[in-house]
Image: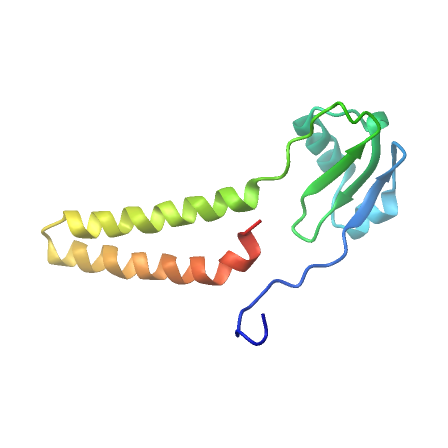
Length: 130
């Protein structure tokens, strides 16, 4: 990436916050998360704490779990790719609005904002790509 002048996000080592079905409170605090957050995330995954072999928080603040019961399917985190797709759709919509209007002021506003959103996409893509 350095040779191509590409910016890639610096990712920290995942923080283990659950081990053998037990919450590691110190690690949870150092990850900047609370027990309430953890409970909510486990509910989203439809997983109970005692079935979690290991649970980790990555540098994006997303919870990843490995379960004792391998037959249970856990959805993979999809917030970042979804955010990137939403940004791309917003940028495309602004370009369409620009092409669809006859008003020169509106056309200039849509074009300007489409470029701003594209710049944001270019900067965020390394962080939001999976």
